Image 1 (tube, helix red, strand yellow):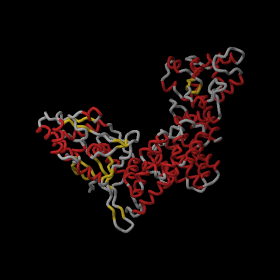
Image 2: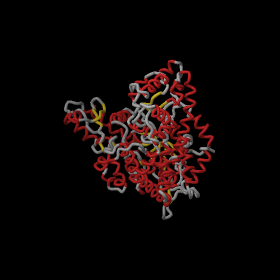
Image 3: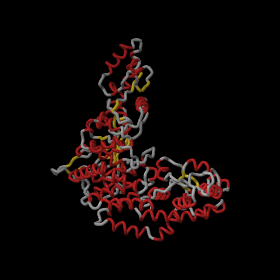
Image 4: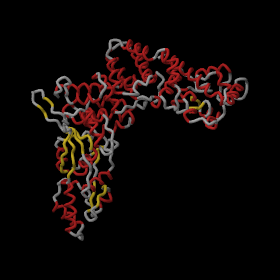
Length: 598
């Protein structure tokens, strides 16, 4: 027999908002930026006024939790779909402030014209126009009675028909009596089931991640500081992208500014580093992994709810301890010393800009690994080496490209082994054998597009070695990457296209190299044997045409640094396939030397 997983109830708007006001229904997004604009709030009210449906809301009731005194507390309902609609109603009907995209608390005032029965977003002109009631919340919310509202309106609009005004304002007040459907999901459902139900019944097909559930759970639990913890995660992520946001937090959210979190993230106000700009998903994944030794965020929802995985019951002690552990994890995550040292480690591996990192999960796990190893203590230089190696290994092997969450959970357990050096050595023996370097990696390099992670490992190897760009005597690959230099086709794209080569053929990563823009332009669509003939000429006293390399020794050093076979000097279109084969071998050899030099 199939168990009913939800029930559907109809609530009047006024009753629903009362549940919000009394805390029975938690709106976890209330302190996050309100993504609707004021015109969408206006349209929502207009739909309700005209009797149009506004869609179902979905709520998930927290499980009843066993208290320390042996009693039980009934769980609140967390609104997981319809947050924007309910927030809009709370703003327009109850007069609640919302947080805008700049994280400023603002009022959204919707005006109503009872003559035209029209809604508009209130502005200075509307406020001055007596034909408009500048804020509908006074009437829908019941602060002003119907008779008074009619009299007040007629007083400034004496020529308007009273009955028409009374009918319009009655209909406006009745907005609070309009009904909305609320799908209430059973509290015993696990998060995977809740996620599936959400996706199936949501008409827009919105993808709701388990991290969203975690953030909703955190924000809805004020007993253990959830709202402040939620803000800490959100604010840190926003500050990492916009350092100037620090002053706005201090000005607009003094309550949060007084918490222990705010001074811990103040260092970001002067930080312009963008190598690792985390999202709330990243923060949760790292902190959950290192504090709880788990990788599946669905387990975090359960733990924050107080779930005892043995008895299958929900206990307050577990909920309290879980919030404390997560909070401590966030403190460690946002710590200036931890964060900056980690970024330096990644940069020391040659990954100097964010665009080079094609696996955010590899970056996240590397940070979790760093925090875990530092907590255990030990030689800092060894910790840095282990983090660098594991990060690059993860990218080389596509470690998190499949079931990332499951892999994260498997790997996080390895952090607690007595000697992580042995863990790394075992993994290298299994996944980075001679066969991998000599055959597997070479074959993997047979791909197109500079977005491929292996291309950026190769570039990182060049940066680490302080290599010069192709045909450059002074400008390094690192400088070109940092300043958005050109990625050049060694066999020019136009030449290959004219020869009938496809996009996947001429955009092979073995055909890419960093070079200065001025050199790239001069090469144009010339074949390698043509432009290298000019380079050889300038190495023998001829005029400098392509860069400033002026000796054959410098040229050969430059070819070696960029993994170009010496035969490239005389290659034409007919040699393209052979060029790619030889260069892939050289690129793999360079990456191998780079990896074991980390």
